[in-house]
Length: 428
Length: 143
Image (cartoon, rainbow over all chains, first blue to last red):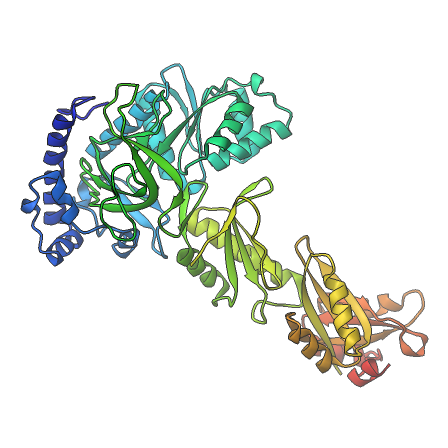
């Protein structure tokens, strides 16, 4: 779905011209209406009018996740609140969540963007699409609902149903498309097999992975077990939504919606552009967003460009999305969390800062998620089990309420074993 | 009137209980009474020993988290209804028992129960006023 005045498959010169016009408009609006951007530009002695070509974008300062939290809640909005028709909240970095706003026009564009990505995966009016995401990705749930409705598919929106009920819906409602994270897909898969449900009893044919990258190997396993085609979408949970980049039927990398986002790949340590074809950090600048423009937003996601044109005929550039990140954020079922932020919520729940606490992410047995190991000390310890259980409950509840992630809190004697395949420690 | 108990945090891992027993044995500490409260992940081991301070120190030196708690050691008649008499008293006064366990080889032939109450002093006062015998700390550890 193209933006008016933007051809679906422009050649590179056409595209650059369109992008530049949109970029200049975005920079002007950000400079005029957002004090944060104005100050950041002035500090670098740059006026938006100095940006005469796309290459000048590199002179502008980066926006980082912490800036979103620092400008909580509305500090980065570029339009008056009366023009905002929707407000989304996502767990941010630190204690304050990141808040993004949308004008009516923004929502229209997003609907189109998501619809385009879904259409590339073959979703159409005959499909029944079930959205199965964790509560921390609720704003994506709405994005996917809107996009699928645009395609006139039947949508089963995101609801807080337990796994068991999701399986029931999947089977009884004859769901043909599921949008989920790789971690949740794995849980769903294991759940179905545990209940003895043969995938042949399902109408499921398409699985769309959102929120986190997946290895080719894991992808093959899930696709084989559920008898489905799988598609990967890339998005940002904080802003402004899902399906910024998407796979086409070639399944060779993700097409970036360059009509709405200007992508750069930088060397995360120097901030300089990565060499062509080289891996680096994805930096995104919004081109069409009115309410919540982002200038050179450092995503922390590690990607590389695919140089060759795609066999599908789309001219939108393609990226490979790699597992590792360039920051110390950990992705729990698509929700990005940061060590300092988790620790802040733990300390708040406990009423003090624990002397020893380690965070582990990844797979342990059949469970994917965050494990919090609290090292026992005299402040936490009690001779009564119920007091210790209260500590566990308090911390687990705080994390689900504040971040929307299910964490398992465990009390440990001291050193924590984390050397298990597929797990990693979340470093401070 | 209150006896001293030490409680130790133990992860549910093979050999941890044996490790505590070994450390105490090496320091010549005798365990007089013991209870283990457990969940699927961890347990709390509660002990009455003959040398409380020494036991606590060596366990802490070996990396265990240890807490001292006051408990009441109450003599219970070794006959039907012996425990009931104590519990009825406490119940009547609205005292809650956080946990309780039995003592090994008590003196004088009668049973001894170790109690932790929500209101320790009230409970001890109540029991004494009703002619229940509460063992002194020295009496316990000296046995």
